[in-house]
Amino acid sequence: MKRALCPGTFDPVTNGHLDIIERAAAIFDELVVAVALSPDKGGGPLFTVEERCDFIRNATSRLPNVSVRPFDTLLVDLARELDARVIIKGLRAVTDFEREFQMAQLNYRIDDDIETMFIMSIPEYMFLSSSAVKEIAGFGSSARGLVPDEVNERMQERLHERR
Ligand code: PNS
Image (cartoon, rainbow, N blue to C red; front, side, top):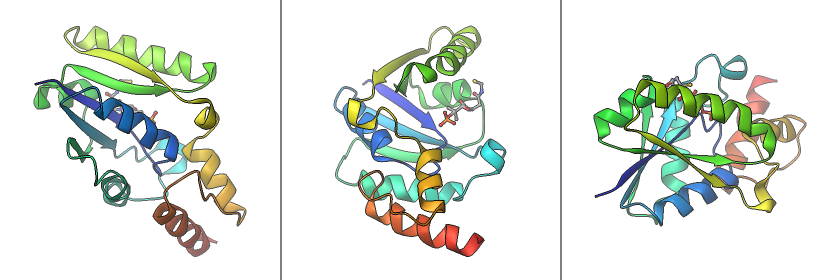
């Protein structure tokens, strides 16, 4: 049984993330999507960790081997707890590389039984990020096609409430 962990902040999940999740789920027996609380990232997340988990649950409901859970520990500790030997990360443009390389090295230093593997983003999603999507929505424009429709609607509402 090969279980992999796909971690991130997912504030909110984008269609680029979902593409990586779907491709990883086709390779492993089980894929656990682990949503970090990340309270300090980018001035605090737009959505609560439960909201972020629910968006991913709804968008992956047709994938029976995908589960979603929040976490607030070291990623490697969660991997050990779940008996997952592989961490899956998506890689977009080269700009991701340095940060991802650092995280992968640190995680390997903490536990060399756990491997980080990367799935390259498809060109269509190469420049898609949660922060870009929030910026688009923040200026009142639709992010349809970049995030699930539910996320697009909730993002407009949430940003409107904050104005
Ligand atoms: O979506 P992100 O912000 O790129 O995800 C980053 C995340 C959540 C995977 C990373 O910050 C993380 O692993 N956090 C848990 C704390 C941890 O293990 N830190 C040490 C490794 S850098």
